[in-house]
Length: 229
Image (cartoon, rainbow, N blue to C red):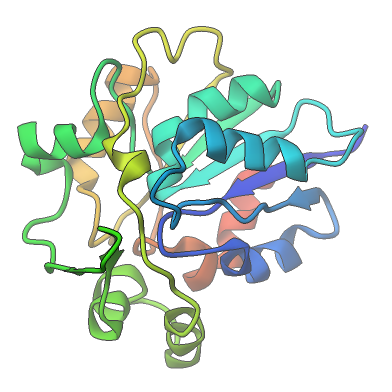
């Protein structure tokens, strides 16, 4: 049976961000990494799930689904739609039923590292992060070459997905889950997500000694974690 792994990128990124990880996984898995409409102001959970379904090989069966950052907001919904065998929150938003990620942050600011640098807002209401913020917050432990490679490709981040309410019962029927936590993440609070993973997923986090983007900083180590699941 083919070992299928589906990779869902986070906000500001695209399928390009998985290049190094795909190389590390290539010998042991078939990888699907769709481009998701996270920069589209009208695209929410359903559009992201549909974009993923559209990208799947016809014979994809029971994949491991990995969601980075903002794509964690709808991961359980995607995992159910893909009939996933397991889902992985990778430095990802861990949704709470009946609320949105942005509402979570307002109600419990401790879930993110404070203070986060203020992004600019474009004419479509999307967040735009400066190259300096991207290097310091999203890619601090990446090489200078990888930082520049990623910064040049970043796109504005629409707030439709983080503003959408995760439905009550959204975890029902979802596959077993893991949370992979970057111990040096400068976006999401490690302490908060350790507690949340224990409460929501019933198990401790898998920890990796990186920042928010382990697929760029340590693709080999991340591949080893994913292939062991």
